[in-house]
Every structure is written in structure tokens, then in C-alpha cells.
Image (cartoon, rainbow, N blue to C red; front, side):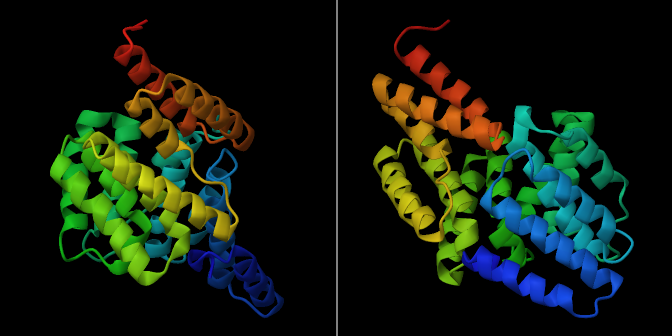
Length: 281
């Protein structure tokens, strides 16, 4: 239910489940879902640690669920960024040490391997696997669940690989299937990814329309609207005062929540504005 945008109801169901007799796997699943609910609402510095604990607990019980949770842990570490209270490298190393499911590599499994390798061994070492992951998400083998949960990081990976076509395709697809499925919890990140994609392709009006959609959506489900898109688009619009206000608000909120990735976006926006106005220093 948290994927549908009703986390309080999901927490209530978890409490009901905990009241009954549970086996070790079921208790591990409760930990995983509770961590994912918290992660869906606040992608700050507190998110990686409970996800990592849940992944380690699942490892001897269900490798597929453990792998998915390790992927969320690594992504949560990227969101926490420089404000992380734990180590992104610790999560990546744990993910690489963990056994893999017996079935052939999935798109999400390749994405996990590539992202973890990028942290532990560097970008160059990760490129071949990340390219396979992007191709996997573009192909027919990626399941609907994989696409709903992880098309946005696959799109950002495509951007990092300078694969503009895949970036465009994956960011657009995430919006489309998220809307069709009515999975509200994934839409803020899907919309943010698409907003950044539109800005990069010079479609600033479309990006601003998506920002308004995102504000309405996040207000409806009761979570803060991610600030990445507004900061990014205002910088590319070249509106000096608007950028300063957007950055100030974003940095204040990010510092409070521990979402350090916002600080990197703020630095980027300052650089764009500085270059655009001839203040390259």
C-alpha cells in the first residue's frame, strides 16, 4: 500500500502482521517493508542503515529479496550523499559480497552490480555492466516491478554513460507506466528524472509543467516535493534571483533531512548560473 501513496495504512497492516505468528522470513520481510516505507517518504541520511540491516537479514533467507533491498540501500546511499551517516562503500561492498540468485541476471541485478562496482572499483570498471543494465531495462525482459521501482536510476545511469537516447526513453517510460499503474510512491522520483531529462534536452516549458504536477502529487500524498527539478530548471532558465531562492530553500531542507544529493544539485546550479552570467569562479 505504500507504493500506492498511503504509507500510514501500510504501517497499520505491518503492525497487524507482526501481531500474528511469523517465521524468520516473514519477520525479515516486515523489516524490509518498514525500511522501504521510510525510504519512500524521506530519502535522507537515516534511510540507508535500516535498508542495509534488512538486506543482510534477508540474505540467508531469500536472495532475490536481499538483492532488491541491497539495490535500494545503494541508491539510498547516493541520496544521502555527503550527509550520509553510514558509508555508501559499506553498502556497496556488502552487496558485492552477497550471493546472487540462481536465476540468470536480471536488469535490476545488473544495475546493482554496476552501481556497487562503480563505488568500490571506479566508473571505468563499472561501465560494461552498467551498459548491460541499461539495455536490460530497455528490453522486454525487465519486469513491471523492476521498471516501476528502478527505471529512474537506470535512466540516470544512461545519462552518466552519455547514452542520450536511452536516457530519453527510460525517463519517459517511467512516467508512463507509473501513471498507468497508479503507483503514486514512485512518481516523485520518476517525475524528477523526467524533469531533468527535459531540461537537458532544452524542453524547459515541459519541465516546468512536470514540476507543477509533482507539487500537486506530493501535496496529495503528504510528502515534501523533491527540490532537484526546480533548482535544475531555474538554473537553466538563467533566472539569477529565482535560482538563489531555490538553492537556499533546497539546501535548508536537505540539510535538515540529510539528503546530501540535493547539495550536489545546488553546486551544479551555481556553476550553470555562474558560467551563464560570466562569473566562472
